[in-house]
Image (cartoon, protein in one colour):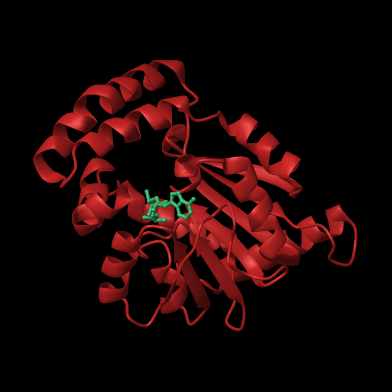
Amino acid sequence: MFDDVAPRYDLVNDVLSLGQDRRWRKIVVDAVGAEPGQTVLDLAAGTGTSSEPYADAGIRVVACDFSLGMLEVGKRRRPDIDFVAGDATALPFADDTFDAVTISFGLRNVSDPHQALREMLRVTKPGGRVVVCEFSHPTFAPFRTVYTEYLMRALPAVAERISSNPDSYVYLAESIRAWPTQDRLAGWLSEAGWEDVKYRNLSAGIVAVHRGFKPGAAGTAAERAERASEYLRRRASRRPH
Ligand SMILES: C[S@@+](CC[C@H](N)C(=O)[O-])C[C@H]1O[C@@H](n2cnc3c(N)ncnc32)[C@H](O)[C@@H]1O
């Protein structure tokens, strides 16, 4: 399915999300908080749109996906990024390889998301971070009703006109509806072994960004969380306003 949508994937995303996807991606990069010298795994990277900001910031990023169609489009667009073919449920990387592992709009599509979360933990260095960006569920009930209408009716109708595989957007709508709530996904991360799991709702809960840490770095969980907050504060103060 992803091989088929690859040629127009990025255009359709921009249209269907009404341009919101660019803002969501920026927030994910801030949550990953990688610095030059670190290596980030962007899993289910598709055409590499979610990997680009790291490469642009001089951070080594490995873009991994199992759709060769998506990888081909990505490699043509960004020959400077390392694209690797691999399955999220059996990653082709050694233990403790990456400083951070992230997955955007990918985990929902993986056949066994629990196994993927365990694999992501395995390849992350002790003390390293995971950031999961995924469609979620609006928290305000009246808005949730309007949004569900958009998902089930408008989105497939728009995709019919602009996508190379409109049926896949019916799948998109259905898979978003069936995806666990923010709290349930946080529970999945903890069950997989991630610590200090927290999440943030974006666009009223249309998207949620979950973050956690791999146990094992020096210090207590509270100390690690404090170090992570301190790091993000420093980054924020460096950013131009
Ligand atoms: C919606 S795209 C997301 C692409 C990109 N991360 C982004 O934000 O635009 C989902 C991707 O998940 C990939 N995918 C699904 N299951 C996978 C698996 N088991 N292993 C690796 N990639 C997988 C698909 O091939 C597809 O490229």
